Image 1: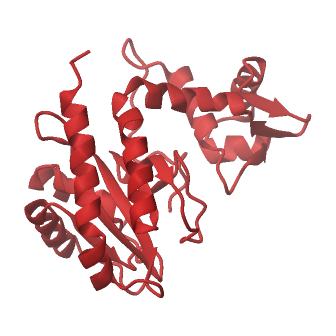
Image 2 (image 1 turned 60 degrees about the vertical axis):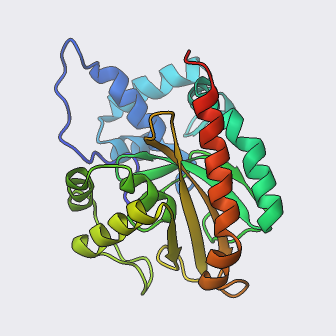
Length: 268
């Protein structure tokens, strides 16, 4: 997957509605990842496309504010950076409503359960209930995966108009993660339309060999898809057909429960 700090669109121009220094600060924060938890000044500059002087000013500012720590050579994020993500999670009531429902679902099906939203060409995990470690990737809140090759991603794409889905796919690098991954735009469009029609999605080993996932949409009071809920399992433990037969009803019921709770909340 692409470096999260890589610009995927033409950079906006500085002006009254765009603060370039703030944008660069966010790029510096996003340059840290599981693959680069600690970086030197030169590495940060290289990953963000900034000059060393510009990267240094931003890093020292973040250090002063308590978001970054430095031992004099290497920089790493501090736990305080989580405040930025939790501000998003706490601002939306859906996640408080969803967590107990997801815990019950995970206990019922004995598989991991996750919720995600769409952000550009990726899905972003906003809640996760573990029962087994089923992927080689270490996923948690804030983790990103490509939308086109994941069950939650296809559910979220199905909530968009066809023209928007096609534009999204044509602007995405469609990489084959396994021999099962669908990478042709028209094939993916067909699958997204099928998801939209049936109201759920099953992806069988397209992101990682042995990984099967089922997803269903979470909708707001207007019926718009605002998130996706999924359960994931291992092919050597439960086949795709068995997962669909035994776990899909519980997943759809949980997604419906969260959607109903969300719709019942008074408008803030």
